[in-house]
Image (cartoon, rainbow, N blue to C red; front, side, top):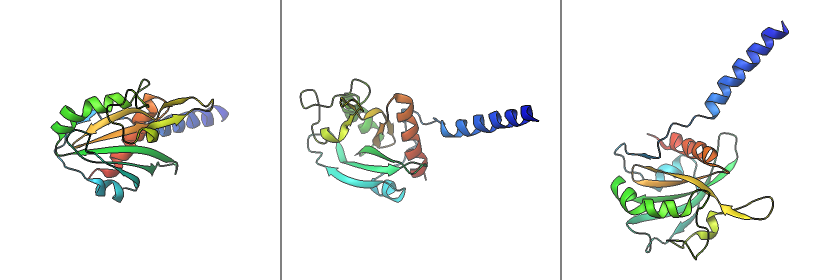
Length: 167
């Protein structure tokens, strides 16, 4: 009986872990849709700031805010909107690479776009500063920056947002 309960427990645990760790959004994908901040607000995104985008090539708008995940924990995101998917790739990717990942720039000395630098910083338990966004995705006409302690967690967080804004 104990063995049967153990097998059931492992099965349930493996099924639930699979649902939690679902990562299925490609880094770059184009479904042909055009999004604005309103789809994010409808999905539960709380806008804290709208950045000035005069120095961010071809961007229409950029926002910083948070969205609660399925556990009710708030996660910070930055979203940049463009006229088209091609503009997001051709004119936004270099700027996205600049601030994301383990070596993402979090100072004015190396930032290609300086607005919002302080919002892109995560402080560790030891007091050291790290990039907040370990990854990003270019989805249709926007770039979504994914918070996390590593790339896997960042992808999970972005996946959650995309699943909630899909039509």
